[in-house]
Length: 455
Ligand code: UD1
Ligand code: CA
Image (cartoon, rainbow, N blue to C red; front, side, top):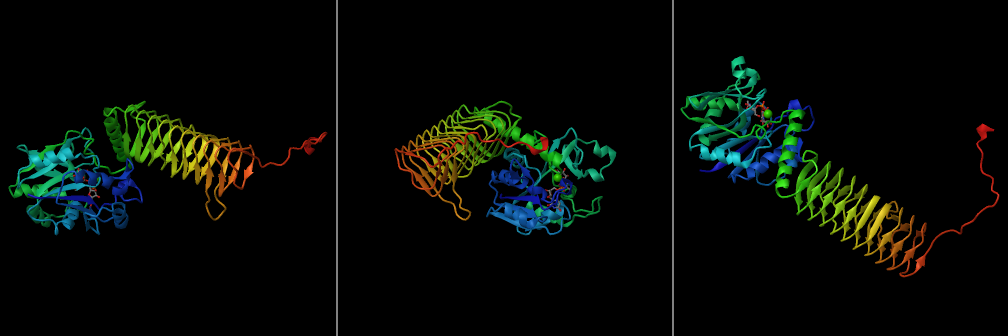
């Protein structure tokens, strides 16, 4: 028996009060819908269909996955109406698993259990007991099976007291679902075609509806507003950090770190508070990340130390590097082993070879720096002439004095020394001292200016 998955993602999400469609609101750096899709991928379905509508183009653009079947729900007339849009191309003989695009923490194992515990030809609703069931559809049971679901807005006071809720995950035989959907009405407080009304139609058709309970209410929480989005973010962060701690990663405070992408860590990595990781980040064995760092799409080699307050993006380091505090590595910064980058240093699209040091107040852009180079404080590679970028090359073992301007394109030979304060516009030969300065003058008896107002 085949499996079709339908993900409902057409709604606007009015309660978000945002121009961004609800299913594109970011959770751990990815749209809500991307989390649901990732979960559905784990089930090896024959067919995954996303029902889209509000913000149609943006939603499709954010998820350029080629094997998604898209079903347009141009007008959002309810969850039942949404599923109907996906049915024409859904094979009758398949089981249909319906997921909501706003329930992002769902785990594949829970869905696998739902599939395994529901006999062929029968139906199931994933439910959970919530301490505070406000806003959710309530599960009305009799004789251990589900009789119907009543939405909060249509529920009596007694029904509102039911704590077992509909998570929005429903499993149905395809052929029967088609016929029940055709019989839905919209005579309810919201004037919508509710998918949840399918349950009563199934019961009337003598199809058993299993109410299968999820283990955790957090896993199945629906995200309707910013408060729930923030709650889900913390829950997901806790899950990601738990996984890393089990792999041996140390955190000063598991609640004060954010992983918005994939963080891969070697052995004995330690991460202090307020570190934010975005995209694919890799930290080698023994790496230490001090407090207040943003690290995005970067790979740091073994035993690298990142001191506080750095901004690192699209960078790689070798082993034993030391970065910061207050350093900025921009895309294309490639540091070899044993490199030191100190405070208020910015490095962009440049390679720095083994053991070199750029320790204070410096800009390095479009440069190739050899091994064992010392770049003095306040050095600038002048890489941009207002129209084009040019390269600076510094040979192995060169010593660049403080406050030097290297006007690119320019090359400094291996072992060269550049005197402090020089503006270098031509090749500086290796193993020699190059200076570019005006002669120092002193004016004896020079009268200091005085403040006219105090006269
Ligand atoms: C829905 C359920 C409720 C359940 C809750 C779980 C119905 C009628 N109610 O309520 O029983 O407890 O989810 O979180 O099903 N959508 C469409 N097209 C539409 C309307 C909605 O695609 O016309 C999509 C939304 O984008 C969203 C999902 O369906 O991803 C759920 O819609 P939402 O409006 O959030 O339903 P709830 O009121 O939360
Ligand atoms: Ca919802």
